[in-house]
Image (cartoon, rainbow, N blue to C red; front, side, top):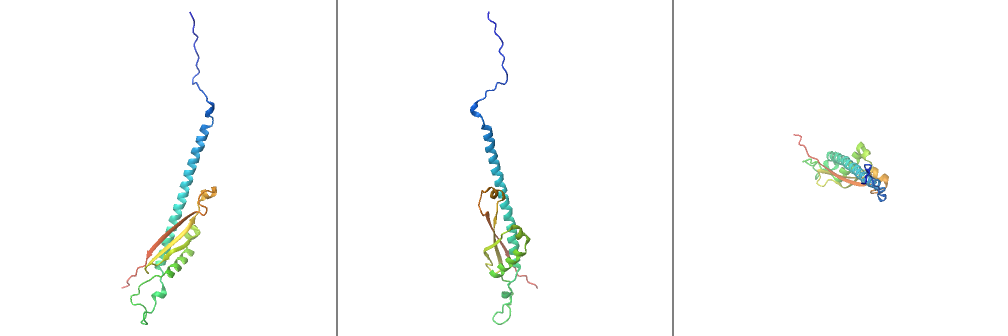
Length: 171
């Protein structure tokens, strides 16, 4: 009769394969790059979105100021030698809108915070009673430009604000 000896097994049994070395590190590195790219994209989109909102507020304020301004030469124009126009219609001109916008932007602290704000066409009064102001600025993406990725001059944001001047009958 043969006697069997008990077999001792150490649990857990681990079998290590040499061709799997470094696979987890590579996976963690790839996921880290993906998470970093998503975070940088989110920050960049937020920066552009906030800059656009500031520029919209600035364009609306400039349009309201321009609509409130008066083209005095037109308003006090003598009609046919009979004195000022009897209807006294407030009318805006391209030049009065542009002058008002330039004055508004130079005095506005928001324009100074935004940076390089340019007045572009169509900044005018298309119908003589509506002030239309178009502003443009370049938004620099802080994290992406530091890494040398993304547009070199930043993202260009253009907005238009409109305000209508209305004649109020005093009587």
